[in-house]
Amino acid sequence: MPLFTGAYPDPLASAADATMQSALKAKRQALSLAGAPNAGNLAMTVVVLTGFEGTRQHPWAGLRENEEHYAASLVKIAAMYAAFDLRASADQLATAGGLTTWPQIEAALVAAFNPEIAAHTPALISGSPSLGAQDKTRRPDYSAVLRPGSGPDFTVDFTQAQTDAFENMMVDQENPGATVTIHGLGYPYLDGKIADDGFFDGTSHGVWLAGDYAQQWPAARIPCVNDVDTAQGTTTRHLAKLMTLLADDALVGPLSSAGMKDLMARAGNFFPDTSPPIWPANGRFSATHGKVGIGPLKSNQLVFSEALIVHDTVRDLRFVVVWQNVIDQGLSKRKLFEPVAALAEATMNAFVP
Image 1 (cartoon, rainbow, N blue to C red):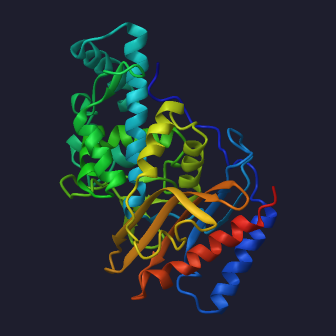
Image 2 (cartoon, rainbow, N blue to C red; image 1 turned 60 degrees about the horizontal axis):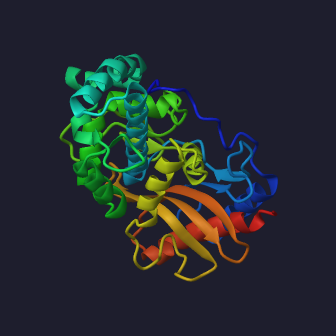
């Protein structure tokens, strides 16, 4: 089983839904005229899930959805998914070969996967002037990430240290677990996988993660709109594609998607005054899964971002909402995120089942 299998079918292959797009733009214009914070620079993509699961025709709408922005911790989602993909591929390789002991499995992974990783290492990694030779040629630390499985589902599973790292970076929403995960994968595999799966265009747009959140490794950066450059960036459209596949249980596979969603369903709340972005518990809109991003621009201003699966409890509809480039302006979080909520709600309300 190859490690690199090509791009996923795009679940947002259709043009933007005209009604949703019109509502999103009209709400943005109204907010701008009212002087709402970030109404002009916020980027957002909203995707309908219910009724379109597993298709390439998910209705969607977006603002500045193709702009690359520094997104801080939001793109830790990519490290999680790449690790889950490595586990699934290792499991298939071991199962097909009837391998049961770790020395057998690790030797097979090195022999089969390392040459593939070399062939798929993005030029932005292999040719980066910011990275050393070791960074450009790293291979996954298989023993740090994987071990023989102990349950019925996987012949190869995650080590306890990697499981703890997922808990730290996705549930506790802290940096050490992300560093452990990225160090376990290495930039060549991590960014090669993201690009091969269709979430990065190879040059400057899409999910890009080439920094380790600890400054222990040098970073490889690409241009972005809201900062000079970034080692942790995305467009909302590319991340919405990834989130839609995850919600559809199509990212890596059903068992892996369920495991990733479990982590995101238990994610801690960085914005306790708002139940991010502004929806209160037991209200019409409920964020059931999420990941936030908070980090400093080079101007030292904080910038916020978020990826969510949202449930409209009145109509029993589910949506993906990805937003970014909300810049701190010294306001309360409630005031800062009210325009985000208003834009998302207007777009979701406009969808006609």
